[in-house]
Image (cartoon, rainbow, N blue to C red; front, side, top):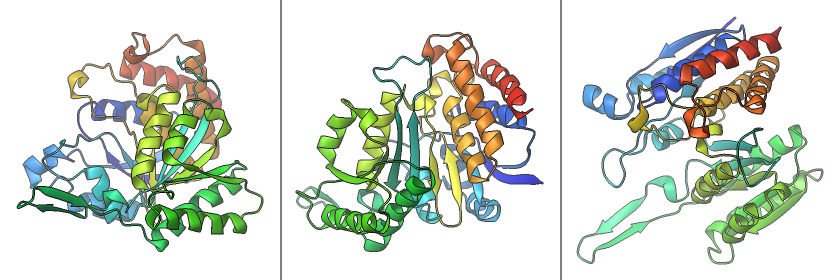
Length: 339
């Protein structure tokens, strides 16, 4: 059976890391039918008049799964983030960001293994903003709903239980934001009673940031609201080597989009310099989502061996291996593990 997957190569280094990832996935001996849409973001806006064509949304609704490379988002002006639009239009309410150490990558910490569960469709990213020209005041509404909170918190607890992970830590600012963060914390406590075999605690967001850069090994599954999750997931990526080596997924009840969460790095685009690890690890998450655990383990074990050996590292990690050579060397190892 061939898996039919929507493929979004993105822009900048996106097409390069996408080719590399497809090369690695081919080594798993699974069959994929890629439904590719090369225009997304600025290129789609220029050619089609919209940064997120309806045809892409229709494709994901049909295939149920997408693999997406980075897409640049204008800062301060321009079109609304394609990532945010995808999450909202497809109701991909769970942003899942594993941050797990790879051997051989310089870091202040070893054996970090965190999973951030970020509510993905509301909070301060709801886009509910107004501007009062007369008084030069801008307002943004952080909408938190019981329904939205319940489903991301349930998602986290169910993941922790299924994967035997402890503890679950809910992150909030309920000491100040008593209604919004207060409700999120209250709901998390309610769910903790439903999962008595899962350890539970809570942390205020500022304290959580401090704790993660002192004792990250004390934490496992972290669930929080949209803005706090955005900050903590990047902070946690920094604990294991940066955004270039961590995976990401946006998951809803019907659809899932797996993506590299780093930028599109237009300054090195087309130079065969990009590190494809982030998108490859995202593809590993996609394999697990599809139930292909053996193939996912082959990718994970191959990557671990590559970084342990340290012979084929890309320029961002002090090596001289090109994007495609890295993928080809990894594919050789994946093929061995599959056998």
